[in-house]
Length: 389
Image 1 (tube, rainbow, N blue to C red):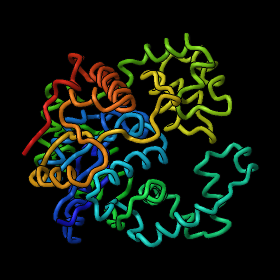
Image 2 (cartoon, rainbow, N blue to C red):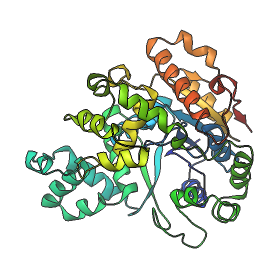
Image 3 (cartoon, one colour):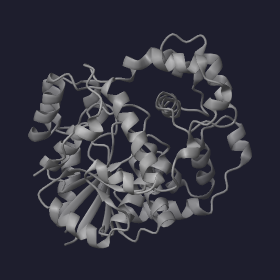
Image 4 (cartoon, helix red, strand yellow):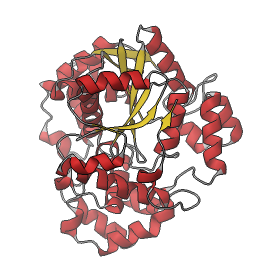
């Protein structure tokens, strides 16, 4: 059984994701599993739809198995996000290829750019100029290779470069499959294809049904009707502002993504801001882009301390099982070098890192329940059923 792995947020699962899945299978892969972000995503926001709904949509639309990327890695920098997801893929022991959407559609070009970054030295002057790390890196690369620098201007290809570097870091020996992306990453839809951000910004029945597979659309509309979606961080806006007005600079400095004294700027801005949008706009600069600020604000809400994050994902957690998922799980049980978790009672016996990671996931789940349009009961991490086809 030739197996492909995909890293995804599926926020929500739309026609572009269905196209990617179809192209991956047509490339000769019998089974496909996804490593999917949990209830919070890489931009530092709650996923519009819960991980349970998104995992269900994925398997009902053809993914064979969905594994969770825990919040410590899902809501983090691109490098940390890629390392967590690719590490999970490596630990499964079954992935023959890592498949991803790509603006350029050229795996060799992506690999070449990753090779270039291994020897890259970023000038301190570039960082001192106020540029973000991504902008400073692109400028440094442009001096060496203009084609590679252009690749780093496109979001999917940039993330693919991080996947290649993460694979080298964790020892994943898998081929790369770059599936050309249809349509723009943001902006207006193209034919039947739309970006996830466009759908999230226009969550009408017509938009969902036009740009998502029918099965996914039914699940999304069900979640909206039940008051479970879309989740919105602004529902706990005053809680975040209160925490920032009472936290110490030392405590804030322990949150991931904080460096170079940024905690002092955040604390000063928090004393006058009356909304999250106003706060984020007052903090952000060229050096500290909005996504990084949002991740910090989320870290404050979740009480994340970088010193407590394990160096590697400690388990493989199943969120949904598709048509060949049971077969994939049997293969993983023979080859995986991490425990496979489908019942939460298993975690207590897996050691300190696993327990700590799951407790952080439980806290994230309790917060997420209060970010839904209707507040939902606590304990979803223990009571939400795994979709099994």
